Length: 232
Image 1 (cartoon, rainbow, N blue to C red):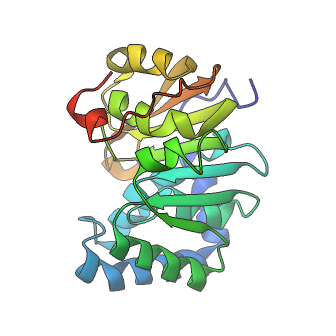
Image 2 (cartoon, one colour):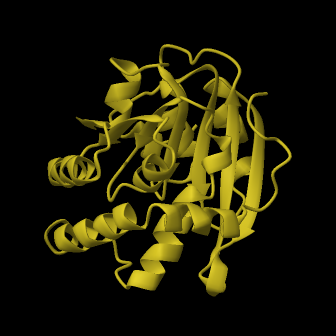
């Protein structure tokens, strides 16, 4: 297994130092997020310190699990978390941002241009991408605050290469038992949940890591909203 399987809680001191090393870019990200948020409703978190902890630091919590030079697909990019903070501190990563809302894609393209991030922004639904052009191309597929884990697995695992990783940023609850059947059907193997707490009491979170051990059967993702309405 190519990722760090010994990791427990994220090292937020190290991650805060990475933000400090890229302070100018994180300031641009915050300013651009604030500018577009009024128009496009990107996030309910708007106070600067909360954005720093709940968006920036939380996005970087999974950083050790992304291998050098990985091709990363992000499902439901929205405000660009975790992709944009990761892209700032890890310029070796190559991102494809999948977002179904056109206005949010406009924001993502604008902020990537300001930050000099060479990411591809794709205006489509995850289930469409998983059936066609982006199927099983990503080394890592990540998503944050998109759907419960069994639904999310059907969006994300079809995008991951065999041997790659599905990485879900989740809340405090461990959803792995709920999603066990879906993960197995979609080609996932070993599943691990890493729990942690954000600094300054900003909330409990978890990372779910699923290794892709088999190709996803051609019938998945099913589309037509079945991923949410009838989870596997």
